[in-house]
Length: 291
Image (tube, rainbow, N blue to C red; front, side, top):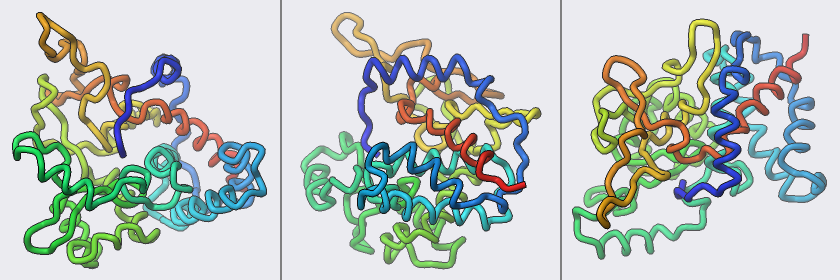
């Protein structure tokens, strides 16, 4: 998704969330998600995301699209942990709420791939930031973000093709189909398909994959703010300061997670302003489960 500088309000929300991560963590992590009642979940979802427009077409689209994700989680025996289920829902919401919660193309579906490619090609190679907008010479496809998790880069599409036995390389738009988008979302979070830990210097990526289990402690608590790094581990907000007229990296933006693996503190990660969806989805799942 396109990165935006956080507003003051978002930063305040982020500070509150960071201060309450432990309290918001889920201690009773193992639940029977097959008992989620979709009708109960629907009521909570519509109240949260539709406001006074509960009968509008956009509200109906929101629920129709998101219900496919919830139903997939409900039927997936691999998902037994409420933290993982809620984080999957949160991730999909952060990435695609701007397009009715459907598996979407990067940039809320508002970016023109052809224009993005032209802009990248006009830049010197060393300055091309989003190279995945440029079509591959062999396949003539561009491997920009698609799906519920904004899946990028040809090597990841190839990985998905090998594991899911579908040709995402030849037809990357297959990642927009809900069933495929769900599998990619699940595997990206649990297998660490998207990101790697950093060294103490923000620009240095290591070889250790970032997986969702890394943020679940022995009591079942879950550091959902730091877990945002599974999707984007880059430092994207207030990461540099001016020194003698030049921008240099701040020295206090990285934290060691374990054994020489570093990540930016949560307040420096993108998407923080909407990570408050996580406690909402935790409570909604709990309240929707039938005894």
